[in-house]
Length: 201
Image 1 (cartoon, rainbow, N blue to C red):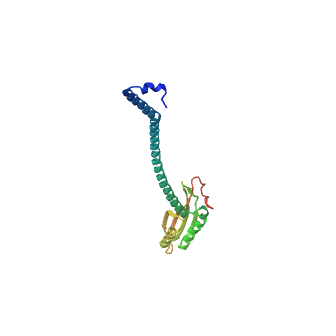
Image 2 (image 1 turned 90 degrees about the vertical axis):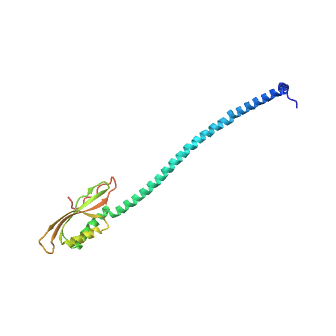
Image 3 (image 1 turned 135 degrees about the vertical axis):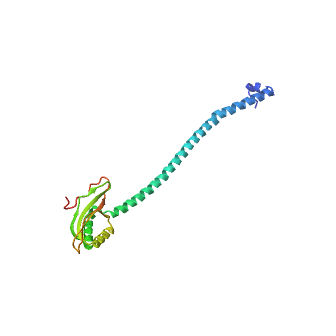
């Protein structure tokens, strides 16, 4: 099929002009391909690379946060286990009367002649309440030592916070002791204080 007459100047042009025209046409096609196809693709690739770099940085940060979170969760679990172990050693509000009876029984079983056993009002601290118990008794040194040993072996925490010893001129009960014992009750933040013991002023 013959070409339309419009292409006659190109077909009949000298070979050198055809080469120049072909080169110019190729340059135009390449430039058009670059500006229409390649340049937008390169811009998109650069944008995607920037997004990839940002996402990789975010992933690295998040991995560090997750590692710290796991570490903190382990620490929290360990602290909760320690807190529960300590709470197990502190009497609950319902156990206080039983604890009073146990301390009183320990004094009697050790041979102490108890003249005063008086729980005092609790002293509220940040996370616990300290419950003092005044105890006056007469006995020998060995009986007091046995009483202290019984107190130390109790499942619940009972400390001797004050001790005052006076000698007596009696061979069977040579010592009078005025003691203040203390037990502790766990108290969550914001919890009301422990009730005052019966008979305390």
